[in-house]
Image (cartoon, rainbow over all chains, first blue to last red; front, side):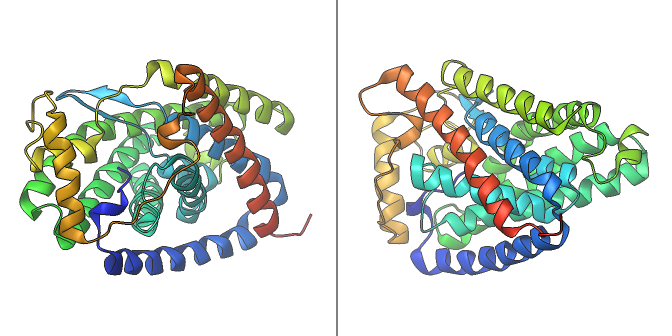
Length: 212
Length: 116
């Protein structure tokens, strides 16, 4: 879902950069206040794993493929939507600058879609759904799916504003493909949460909720 | 599990994925690209045949539409090292994974609360 430079006019891209920078500043404030020294190596490992798994495009029907984004997982594991913003901003920076994956002028839009929406929908989806159904892994699956799907819907709206996609076709096509790709996001989020919770229950901000 | 052990196992898993990804990853367009090609009639919405010529023209149309012709030459475009085929792709994803590890560690170190 990495938007390339050509898809959004420069002026609009700048607006998304401003929004992204506000959330990046908030994410840095979260890191200063809430990320203890002991979590630093774990955040780095999580980011490396998210980068690697983003390179693994999984085929879906209709000659299309998709990969995990990982913001929901980072937000759930580290207990804050801003963790998703923190990790995804750095992942998208490296992907754009070193590998040409995702544009430079539109990187703000990609940070908003994948980092901010992914982190917030992932985190609040997870805590909300877990509160209702009680199962942490089912909650992680649904929140992971929703984080990816809603990112794609916002992306379609941005591209409609940009004039690149007509709104209804963009929503239909982006929604259909990402409803399927979301299953990849949800599945890997739930499995990774299970592995991390088994290895290090103390890392999770809400260990009791996970084992429930 | 000790932090050291967790980090070693975590990095090992990330590197296994990084090495395997170039061999396992699908080369099909991703969801956004597929939507773009379908809208610009280079690929059927629910079909897999991509018309390369129409796809190229679609990219030109997008630039004409938005006026954003910013272009940038990445060091390892599309997770590859020019002239090195699959080996280059493996190196590219492995380098990226290790770079993430170092970069995120450094940024987290600088920004985390300095209380212990």
